[in-house]
Length: 243
Image 1 (cartoon, rainbow, N blue to C red):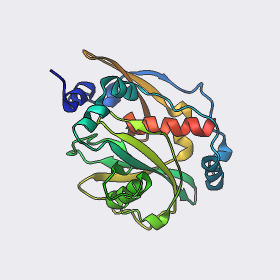
Image 2: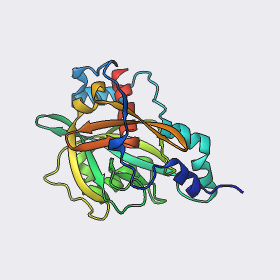
Image 3: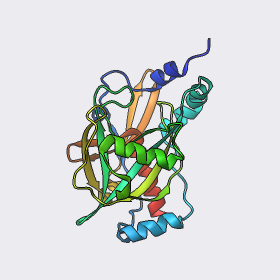
């Protein structure tokens, strides 16, 4: 009997009431190369994405499991959408560049309660994956497109929930206020880009279960716990900037 994509996703996902904060830290990445401070500048970031250096995306355990289990191929065979996009918004505040993140509401089907970027599935009417990221950002947090300057994209990131996610990187002029959709978004907050790009703040945690071992990245910040796909995409931004 062939497993459905839903059953495969369930076998790879964390168990009910899984608490990633309780998973032991294997190591921190403090011995890795730091991103140069001069890159924390809007114009320099534009130039970096306009002419990116050679760099290699990091393949996380999540991506490996998705590829090995053929989750995305099965979802496509079932006629389900697999293309998605997130906006990786770098907000140009007066005190420096910050990354905007959201906390998802607890009742959502995928990644409930987790910290994420605004984004979602590509709609049939979307002209491009960038259109998807812009539309979802306005729907989720009320971020108008005229505040967004898209500077580039990063390679697709595969998720256990069965999506091929394209991170769309943008510089954002801060609006007077965000207007989060209360159904999807519990909170909107910002983290300094310099903090997120400092590998000393990147943790590798290893979870052991009957299904085997899984390792994932975590980037704790104050009372926030950034982990999973969001941390994995931030790691890829780190690799691009340090290259």
